Length: 107
Image 1 (spheres, one colour):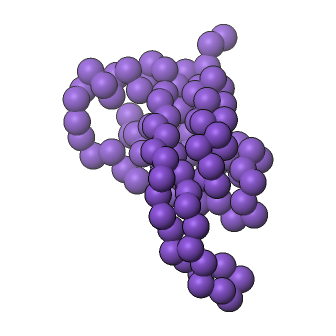
Image 2 (cartoon, one colour):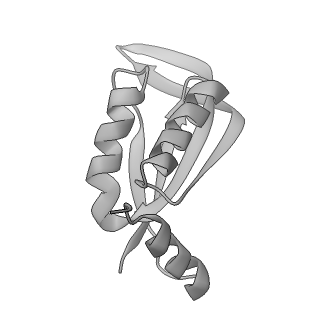
């Protein structure tokens, strides 16, 4: 089974927690980490922008990334939220088994 680390940003800690909690409750992610206090510099609509944002990192199965992405887009305040998935190439096999178990929706 393949797993992904999904990196996202949010406008605030509260928004990141709401999105992360929803993803975990709906079993789209096994875990979500909220890291507050990030400073971002980026171009938006032709203007160089600097903002404080919050990082949200979710761990999930590769096959769930499309559904997770759509759910984040539905919940997010941004027009174009950052949602990017990175492959998990290895690690603690017991943790990977836990990720697999926690991303199965109850019947």
